Image 1 (cartoon, rainbow, N blue to C red):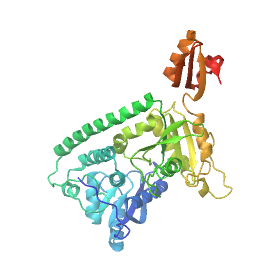
Image 2 (cartoon, rainbow, N blue to C red):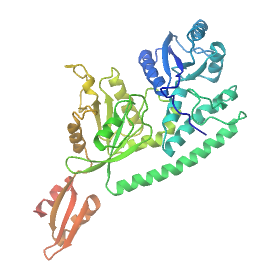
Image 3 (cartoon, rainbow, N blue to C red):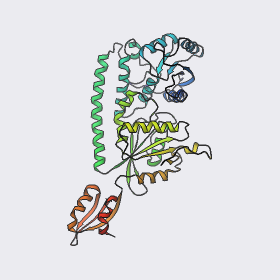
Image 4 (cartoon, rainbow, N blue to C red):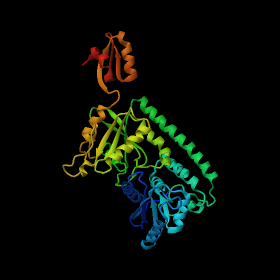
Length: 419
């Protein structure tokens, strides 16, 4: 198994023609613009795009018979290396299109899987990507044994691949089961770390949102994490955690997560569910959005819907409108609610974001000195359970202690506070 590097600036990039089939189910132009960015992220050069409106995709070639001939002629004239369809194609459609156009083909799912394969760095990330690729490959083996066995360069060929031409479904199913077992082991270890954090009272704040919204830039600004910042989709794949000290003195754990896109392949959602669960288990979620994007409201909804699927309805979610510096001067951002406007690149508005995080901290603590009568030992027990005792001393007058105490206990301890 091996991953091939993205093309360097010195290497010739593949010329890609993008194909959009507009059935009215979603905003085709916005999706095509996103596909354009995905192709760039994968290391190819988008040459142009062609769109056809249809009530449903053609079962044989996805597009109409006349349109597929136009595509084939265009590919021949312009020396196109790669066709990229903005939908998921069946094995029959892939075979028929390649036979007619004589050009290599990838669909939207293959493209995203390829980008993930090139970006995964951690063991868990690599396992998740390979699992998603093999699940996608399994029903597509028939008639494509040779193509799926290649390890040549180019988009759609990176990732697990297969070194033997006689690869069969039995071998892939066995590999899938092995990957699942390895992932279970990795997930158990990560969950142990998460439980330890909870036990130690570590508060977690997750950065989630649409890909290329500026999550990594914000992470680096706040914590100097050194996460890759790049103006491309899925620049960051593996989650990163760093400590962040808030102005009030509380330290939280900031977690950067994988970005989201429209119509994220189902296999990837399943494969990365454990990673996304880190966001679901966070105490506070920052929904980062590129405010300068015309699709900003859609991006916020994509993230919000996924968080609801993961069961985050009761978790404080703070909408964060990033890249506000890119908006034309005087333009009013059409968002309402308790959103925070920032520019992660310059730090503008970050102080308000930190204040918003502090306002939403669970069991907010205050550091106090107390002198508890021995008859109030139940209060001391509650502080041990829900707070954190830094120092304690038994005196003739009672138990003297310094502790981090939840604000909800104010009424219980107000009579025992000492300077």
